[in-house]
Image 1: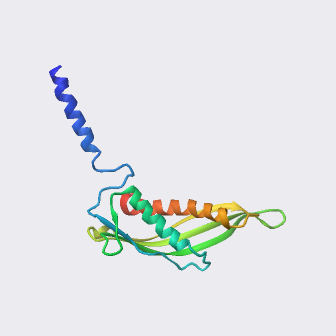
Image 2: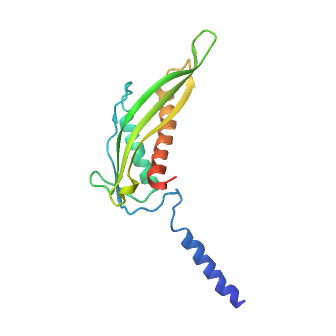
Length: 167
């Protein structure tokens, strides 16, 4: 009975200390307290107004929600900057009448990430994702909102994983 009283606290201590390296989002700890997301300009050939603001806010929100880092406007320990470089709609499948049966919206974002405290983590990388929708649909209103939600969720999560989770 004495050995159980001794072993149980030791096992609990080891199991709790093993969880200290990662948080629930999978982000590894970084020597940073602040992050900065500069405004992502829209430099795509086909411009959809407002998506640059939406993307910038989504990236800020994701990092704030999944880490304990504080958002700052300048001199952040972690810096995210870049531009939207592609907004493209392409037909994916055709009908017998030579019309698009399905279209694909593809958005690509070039991201430059800098970590002041660990420069080997710095990168410049292109992130891209797509959304398929019916060929008879117009990409406006709720259809566009749904497409942007899916695409930006994936791209921002990929950026988070590359910069903080190291997946």
